[in-house]
Amino acid sequence: MKTFLLPVCLSISLAGLSFAAGHHPGPANATPKPNESPAPADANTKPAADAGMITVKNKSSFQVDAAARNPFWPIGWKPTGRVAGGAGGGSDQGEVPPGAFLVTSITLDGATHFAIINGKTMGEGQQFGLQVGTQVYQVVVKRIEDGRVIIGRHDEEIAVPLRRKEAPEHPPEGATRSPSPSPK
Image (cartoon, rainbow, N blue to C red; front, top):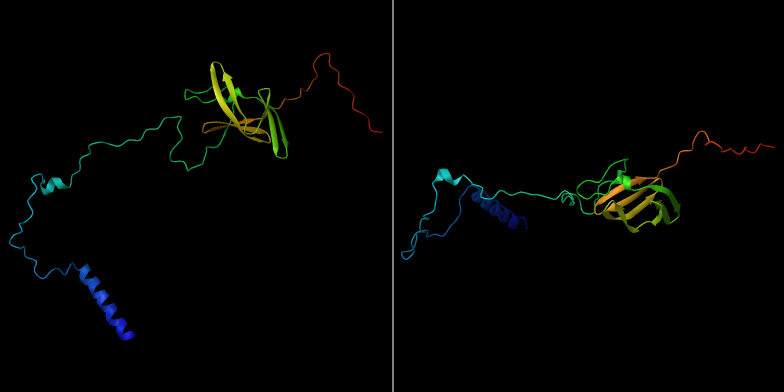
């Protein structure tokens, strides 16, 4: 078996070396036949100095609308939600102004989550129209979490925090505090 493999391996390696050295075995008779003519020279062939230069006819460009999804984001990835601020208004791309939402209550009970948004009870996945001035935005309640609600519109997510009423330190005039029960 060794006597068979040794000549086979040597012939393969010598063939590879001769190929790498530029020696290509060709047909024994490489001269053209009398009825064949050499290839015609191309009339449009440029001199060797101009052959390396490339001219750009149409420069490519990539333009995306500001409201469109970024094509370089991974599939299914969405930007993180932003916390709704105070007096921010919507921009000219049609974004929902974050100050348009008021979350006053959140109820988390096992698998059911409800929140009171702008005075209406909403559940997860519920879609509703929000009117701000003359503009009507179609939004959906994506998630209701402890302390905030994630509201979505197209590819945008807005995190709206729960607004808690601060208890006044002094009762209003005319109001009396009930005495706390004394321990017995």
